Amino acid sequence: MIDEKIERFSVLCEKSVLGETLKNIVLSSPRTGEATKIKGVLKTVSEKTVLQLEYSLSEGRVRQENLSPEQVRERISALSQSFSRCDLNDGGGNASLLTSKKGKISLVCHGTIGTGEKQSPTAESVKNYILDGTEPFLFYLGISDKNGRVHDKKQAKFRQINRFLEYVGDTVKYLPKNGNLRIADLCCGKSYLSFAVYHYFVNILGRTVSMDCMDLKESVMAYCSETALKCGFDGMSFSAGDVNKYSPKEPPHMVVSLHACDTATDIVLNRAVSLGARVILSTPCCHRELSRKINSPQLKFICDNSVLKSKFCDAATDSLRILRLKACGYVADATEFTDPEDTPKNVLIRARRDMGFDFGRREKFLNEYKAAYAFLCGTDAPDLPQEKLYE
Image (cartoon, rainbow, N blue to C red; front, side, top):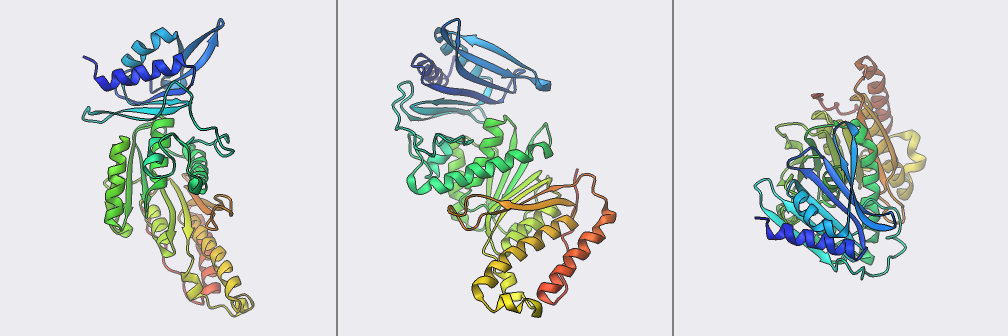
């Protein structure tokens, strides 16, 4: 007997197709079958509207199936039983059918599906963002309302999240192509990025993901755990603790961090290197330590002005971090994360492990780092983290 939630989801899909308000249907995280992902959109074939399903198969193969509106309900009902995640995005709202590893089924709906009665898109929503605001986790985190409209005061945060996902997308080619993808968000705070990154890999790319999120505040981690449960994100885990002591059974392939304050960014970077992460994406915040330590007679003309000293130390701190990463076998740089009008903390440090790194070159990068640190602080540089370099 088909679960009533599956039947309800299938009816909503049928209604969306009949009303021609469908944006897309995405079935991901397969439980059985050959397809790794199925995406459905409306198409016109022989002057008739059909739901065209595109099946993503192994070795890059795809196949298509066209369904008349009358076939949608039965077909989606059958297909959705083979996937852990089924998302319906409609002009008037959205629905997500979620099946946990233990087989528990839940259905989350927002808005009015099949009518297209949704607030007119703003200038922001018509941009080609990865997220469109209707994702359930954005509602639970207070970014958008139940109809998928991004709150005015959260527009900057919404742009920030989408921009970060674009950078995440650039790193996919450096991550394992198959199997369980392990990700860690260290100093995750309210975990805006954690949820977005998990959604991106699981619901958009169709990957299986285990994601560890860690921060010091127990109450915040409890809130995030509850939110993940509501969203059906059963591959996410949240723990309160010291990032220095983060020691997973298996090392993460990717480590991300958003606005870890002052030396917390260094702790995140060092931990990521020690665990041999293939990709690191970190946005620093509050560069105070160098401002206290700087001791360079040659830079007195800058340091005599507190405003200029602060700006200089921001840039110098991140430059030192990049040198450290290079000395540890990473290709690293810094880029502008988002519009400075959205946040002044708009630098993103991105690094990927150089899989062919010649450790004979370590001396060169290490000497550059030590020389720069000595010039700025007048003392020896801290030791580099000891990397395990897992494969």
